[in-house]
Length: 291
Image (cartoon, rainbow, N blue to C red; front, top):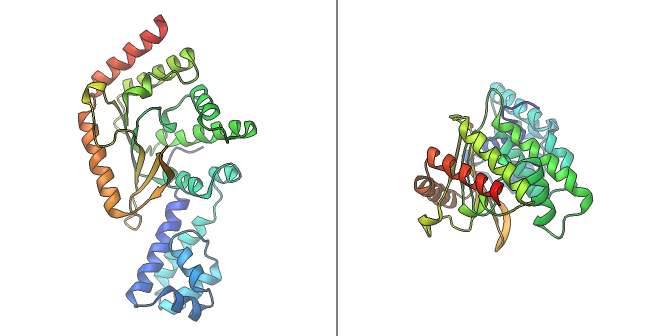
């Protein structure tokens, strides 16, 4: 699997946003466009938010109605074709919700990811054994037959950390994330070693930090948030929020993203620096070895 961004989902969003911009510039409603083109107002709406695929005939009708120039139509058609490519996460559509599949597509196409996780190691940094232990213990609703595919998909996501175009990934771990015995002492020791190895790489695209207990209360305490940014100017930031007190899901509301980003930057600044994070990881690894 290539390590560069997979832009299928990002292209679908760009296509929808560009079509929406043309409609808005003409002062038309989705209902009016749907009636005039025969696509239906609801279909036009779902195409614009990238939740319905656009056919060649559908694009042709919209382009004609919006009186688009041939060069613009060619660009939109290239985006449309790109949205039809099947990607690795499509193999897991029977395992995950539509919302999570969309998240996987966004994560795969992100240029930058900033993540805070309070109690666990995030999926992009997990070892296979840790991932399996997390999935088995994470929910009583996960069928045993789905554990293997879920582990596979979690490891597949990690391709974005490698290759010629790795994602810029900054992650802050809560103090409990490196001390909770997920999978037992041996599994956790290997997981902490893996984190230390990643920090030791001193990769400019990968920044791992741990918040010490001494920081106390902060703006992201108790949260699990992944903020994704994209190279395309047409695609706004998205966040995946996962909490035991609310439903997990994607957020693209600008004010919410601004708050989350500011909170992340604050907690990143308050976390241990690279050297102190590495020293803490080595200390925890030794504790797991000695006990």
